[in-house]
Length: 217
Image 1 (spheres, helix red, strand yellow):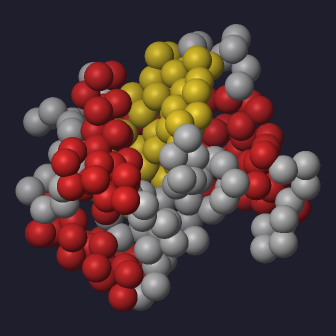
Image 2 (tube, rainbow, N blue to C red):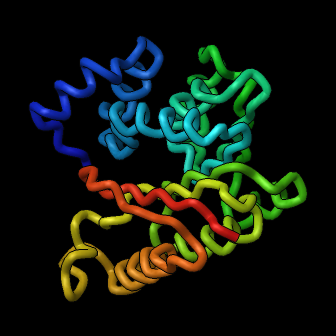
């Protein structure tokens, strides 16, 4: 679903999160393909803020799309930091490869190609990691959380986008256009991260909802 750009969001982006030519080019390419579903620039800057405040060095991103969010996050990492991003769509992989090659942070990014359920297993021996950013198929969010619970270090960050599921989480049942299975999966994901014995969590009221959790164990 395309994000609606209000006057306030446009103001925030221009003032605090201006896109450089590379990020603008990625955004333009996706819009031309009618795939304007990546995070917004203001959310990219928010992720950078969290990464720097947390002292994050090693990130796993589940869902590369065209590399827009990957570049935002990699630019917040220290010189010895690294981001592993998981991508399975051939068309998106091609755009992401080109974007990373042009990027100033290409040495800090490794893209793993294939289904995330498989590629995550190849990353596990390299853990624990400092942070995971989940922005992929919504029905699998709980499986990705299962992996994060085993592979993100204590006091590490678990961040997920689209956790309001187009506003449907506030409803008593899934609306037309959202399957019951996906709706139930996201409700279960949000409930798991609401456990105060395991996580210190909030959901930021962005257009799509962004959950930020500190793993306590």
